[in-house]
Image 1 (cartoon, rainbow, N blue to C red):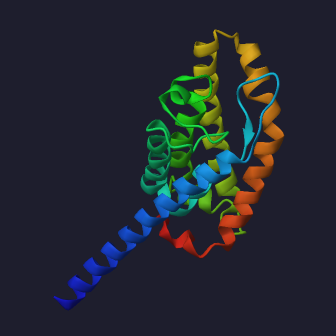
Image 2 (image 1 turned 45 degrees about the vertical axis):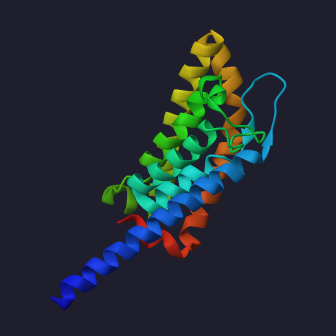
Length: 193
């Protein structure tokens, strides 16, 4: 009986750690959103926000990675200034960048997918697998963001690509490389189970 109680206590402790870390990754996403550069030709700013969903998914798994981004989105929806440019409110979620914000949640889920095949692709401990997961998460975030941007602004597909995708590819490549290396060094990477 003691062994069962010990396992239950460990499970509760692990869930508590994951909940706390989900809140921390929501905060990380907010801080990374604040670090932004506005471009003159698009309402979509360059920022570091995707670092939050990447890390939350890779380190916490899909469920708690998603939870971190839902917390982030809900905080912004109620008006707390967690979005780019220290903004918040529902108008940001229904505006031209709302699809990208929703895409953070999808990105975290994808980055949290547990795939033994992806993790074993690289002998360096899954770095390549993590990069592939982040690329898939980024593609989904881009897809949601682009579709929503085109609906809200009534833009063509080409105009959407020019405003929402092409200018951001180099920076997103750097973010993916940085996160792939960083998650290998963090002691919380064993929480994905």
